[in-house]
Length: 309
Image (cartoon, rainbow, N blue to C red; front, side):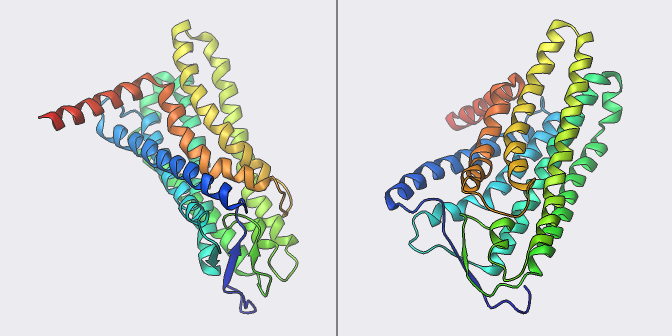
């Protein structure tokens, strides 16, 4: 951190102040987090074990679920334990580390969702060339590119944060560390830093969302030439992806496509995309996808049979 900083520890205000409400939230959010771990972990296991789920779509889905596990784990475990703590603190270095990994996994997920939209575009609009275009090596390259893009984005965020001096106060008005609440604690003007964050986080979200919307408009236009059954299957797969995109991008655009400031609604919006959305993603994909459900049934059946034997 900057040499002029004399703050070494931050106090986190948290989400609620009522002890009774905090205890209820502890139980609720703990169950949600466990469901996130189990649901996404089951998808990763199923895709990697099942022989019927080796297409690029499921290859990307397994990595999306892996990112959801790591993304949620950067915030939720500490958030849950803080609900039972009288004083919620985090070191300044720990705060910066949380910001790094939170943005790293968050932007990696954005790029993966964009890659998945491209995969659906090729599958529906260029079906004869699908296997050649979406080869295994290309899929691995797209996943690696998503991780690399997340690292570059997160490094920019951290370079902005470490230059700021913190000389008091040390109370962060949030339930986890993020750049906008941290900017309020800096003892210097952060308007330039706010613009950098706006350009880095907000524009990535908006441009990726624009690419996603454009790809699905092209997909819907091309579906007119498919049979009724082909349209139904394609729309079922695309609907799951579109739902996940809206759940993730809506809050991200709301929080980052504006100048550096904090609204009272920010905490509630952040709860949705840090705690709730990672749990919903495996539910959305499995409920609307017969292949994933069948593969999970077979996998579960093998586990039960092996246990009986």
